Image 1 (cartoon, rainbow, N blue to C red):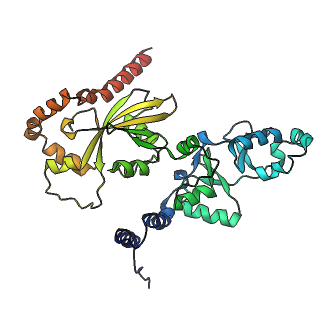
Image 2 (cartoon, rainbow, N blue to C red):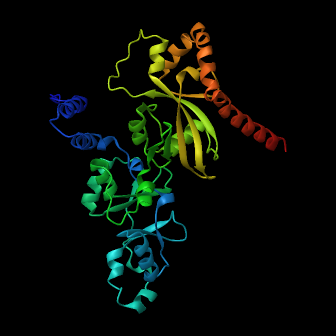
Length: 362
């Protein structure tokens, strides 16, 4: 006969929240315990370093090259690749290289491949962090190469990444401000109430700082992924998009009888402006809060990232009530409300479609 647990995971989280509110435990202690509870549901791809950010060294490089790389980045372990960076064949340890520091001739003659630890340990990107931690302990390794379902290399994951998932980001005395920001991203609130957001910032951090909820089941982990999904493509610098996001309330019980005004209070509109970007990635985004009174939920240019339940209620009540708000909207528009936002997304897509049609005609 199977016995039911005395306390479910959700009940335990509720108890932790109550303990934190009462002062029995600190907020960071609550976060750490919740992170431990969630680690089984966290995938390796959520904590790994993506391949584009990986610092690696060619197998044919000499130990002098390795020494120079180590002096620049101070990494104790560096992936070793052959021909292409996605073909990682081993891991080079800085400690092994430092044994030859006083032997200059050997530093010139010995290649990195000769001291690399092989074979490399590979893990799937959908592996749970819990299982990864267990495998690290059993295999006594600190680094693994992450593969996607097709066998392609997508990044690396280390024991430190796993620990940081539990206790938070770990930095050392050698990390510069730029390196920390590149690793964690940042959110800076301007005096005018807008937010400068680095594209590497995690979605969880964005949600917490802006007090918003993002749709469940999304496949992105960073603001860059969120922005690209919102636009539907990699936007260029200066590109703009208007999105409606759901506010995050502690009490998630919704009153089915709530009116349209209540629904508006549950959402927040933002203008997303791309500040930095290149052909491959978004770099920095400006989040500008927009008055909900200026947003027509039926417009094609608005990207709804809220629950379908709220959208249905908005559309149901969008008749006369919205007409009564016209004066309000026009007043705000005269004071800087970006009414033209509603056309940004559509214009961009129309241009893309025209370009596509012309290329097909050719």
